[in-house]
Image (cartoon, rainbow, N blue to C red; front, side, top):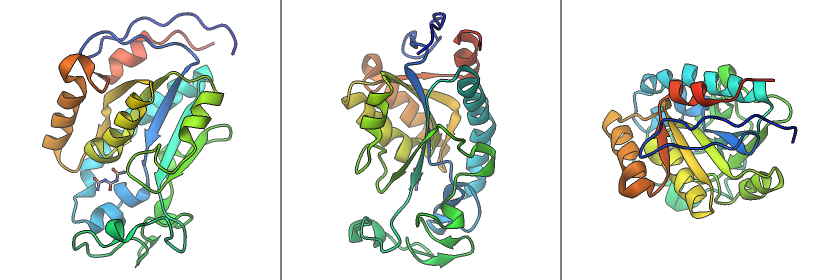
Length: 229
Ligand code: TIU
């Protein structure tokens, strides 16, 4: 890792977050067509997917900042194998969606790896050198090699973005916190189909002295980064 100037503390809740340059991964959770566009899994569950649009530009800003500094970037996709062997009946059979995981929809089979709808949205598409994790669960550590991928890169801190705040983002953040990562969630870069659930999640994360981690606005993060080389 080339020498990096120190970053300033980020004005975060519940207190300042210090980010080690080069050892902090940006983790973008499930910014997939399946959740953000019409005809995907999120819509099949009965949600208004337009609510997630506002997270795209702030996540792009973080992605640009990380790429400019050569810092590690991780993208995750909630996805299942073609034969659904990694989708337990408890997940596929839950509730009464209009289409279930694996059913054919307008963007291909819902939440199935390699289908058009399972791709990350073009605005945030991964580039060479970035880690892409296919995850069968809501948390990005369950059933994946994410922890190992972070360890070999010397990552100790995670800055999180993505959707949805109270489901895959919060589950991943809790898994990461238990594994010893210091985690910061960027307010504008995450979104939920339920605004009240997003607000409650941010409050839960930062309560009790940061029991799960930190939350900060985008501007506070960008302002605190050392200049790009
Ligand atoms: N339904 C919902 O809010 N979320 C998910 O099913 N997955 C993710 O959060 N990615």
